[in-house]
Length: 422
Image 1 (cartoon, rainbow, N blue to C red):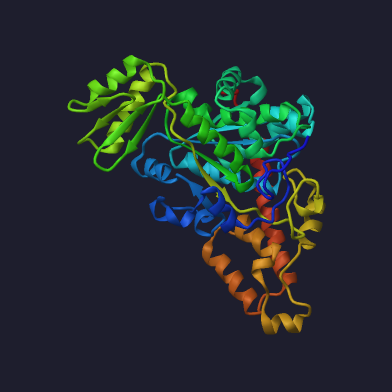
Image 2: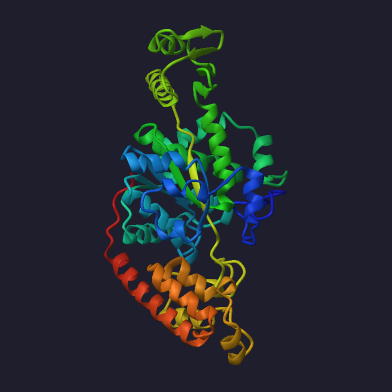
């Protein structure tokens, strides 16, 4: 299947990981995480270390965490192979959000894997179980489901598809004349995945942690969520304007009655006095009472790609670039000990100039996953840059951390009893 002319580095089905993040964020309206970081209660290392680099509308999620109000965290995994090191960051983000009060939703994207990767349904099931064991071993709690087995999801995908045409999909994904029809079907199914928590448990803010390559799905979903609303609510400074989007007459009348003194015009109602949030909540309740979706526009976070162990991209098609969680210990050892470093040409030169941590896959493995304590990571960075820590000893220490992590992780995976699908 052909992804056509999708922008380089931003295709959900591509493998490019060389991304100009500032340019990409500017082009697609993604905000740097620093704009919302002070609002996040007790932010974890993946926020403070700059691993999560951008967001869309995360402020509403941070507010829900601070005020202990309902929100959802959802993401999906395509079961086309064994889960591996490159999937660990999203898993950690999901688990952390559930610990902060979010209700979790995990989609096993077997329809996408079957359509895009040609993975058999049986293999999708087996790989899907591996992903879920990883998540529950990390402490996940919440709903999980397979796309192919969720009838409500499929109905939602059908409704969402009514609100999008092929020209829009082509503009977002770069589909061409040789694109299989299953490809856009898998895209619209992912829209339904993102909106599904609000159908399953009622409208509430939803955050989707992803790599930046998945942003096309978020842009499409945000547009469709807006189109599926009966009303838009706009703060116009001197008033709050509630605009009908083909809302039933009775729903419009209910909004007018809900705010005494409001002025009704053809197509919109202007409300003065109440704050925006109160008006938005009241309108959402009216919409829901009249059978509408009342969706919150989904939020998202974007983490940077962890480079492969040999530098460059981390990809299942390049086995040396990663290790899976079920890989034999000897294979893991070989890969870690052969990992590309930021060392100099000679020991003397490294002692004199220090290492280059920003291009060292060993250091980045520690930064992303293997060293939780910031002070310990800071000392590794200092000693490397000062030429005190050489690559050989650093690799050996990192290998021991990897071994300890995998031993504990595998034991927890083996102890998992998978719940029934939600």
